[in-house]
Image (tube, rainbow, N blue to C red; front, side, top):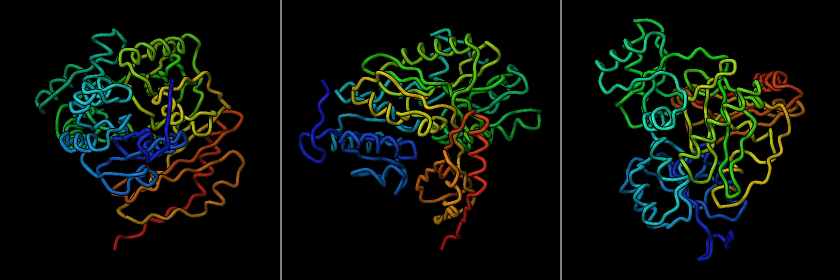
Amino acid sequence: MVNIGTPLTTVGKKALLCGSGELGKEIAIELQRYGIEVIALDRYENAPAMQVAHRSYTLSMLDGERLRQIIELEKPDYIIPEVEAIATPTLVELEKEGYSVTPTAKAAWLTMNREGIRRLAAEELGIKTSEYRFAETEQEFREAIAEIGIPCVVKPIMSSSGHGQSTVKCEQDIEPAWRCAQEGGRAGAGRVIVERFVDFDYEITLLTVRHSAGTTLLEPIGHHQVDGDYRESWQPQPMSPLARERAGEIARKITSALGGHGIFGVEMFIKGDEVIFSEVSPRPHDTGMVTMISQDLSEFALHARAVIGLPIPSVRFFGASASKAIVVEGDSDKVVFGNLDEVVAEEGVQIRLFGKPEVVGHRRFGVILATDETIEKALEKAERAYAKLKIEVLPRK
């Protein structure tokens, strides 16, 4: 039996978010719909989830000592990682001491870096992946490329949103790829993974929810990325019955091995009926933001529901939908979005602005959502809405 008391009292339930970006913001909102008291953590002040949480703390999520201090002070009922770069050994210790980590501390630890999850999938579970090598030094990196061959994809073992990721297409790309990976890792310079380039027809995210009543697979999501960073997604991605069945088997196998309750974003490459596992995130996925318009329970609502122990008897899918990321470029702490009345003038269009405090380089600041009769029409509608959006990046003082 699940019981939830009044927030901000001794009988209330507390959730602590480790990471407070746009995904964490939506999780916080969904948790508060159930009367959960939310504490938001991130490495910078005024992160999106902090703006809606009951309380917040600013710290490096890799600072295990400080993370433990906050958790022991707040004594949360649920610890919910929203980013990869967390002091996972501390989470493992806290879980052993009785704290609840979503979905489990093991899942957070294994998926914090690409090495842990790739070895679990390929070497322990026997799931098909692309050929890969890990490298610690530039010499090992060059040797790995020689073994894997060109073209290949290079990624830091710990990063997100495509940071540090690049494709080596010729000999001249090798040195820049190493430098990019070292500069783009979440924890600074370190190990990288070199993957054989997969010749695929398309790639998907299969959102998989483990909850108190079982496991639920959502409609597959197709997506377009630029240097590993999501730009567009759509649902449902058309798949052959056999490919869909195989994708479901892989999703169930990897999420079962990770355990716990919550939503997982399982990424896979599809070539005809062949399915190749890529990555898994034990949390809502950026490509899954399309679910905010495509179904009655978004990935964030499903995550919140699963985390607090509620069953998910069904998910009602509304039909062809698309999302388009709003990416801002520049160096500013003041960004203005204009012409919003025209952006949402067309039927079946919504917009979400995340409220991020600044941009340095390029950063995702929002998302446009659209529905229509087909995914092609939904994508075109999202593109039309995006074209109407006016973005003004004002200079810093």
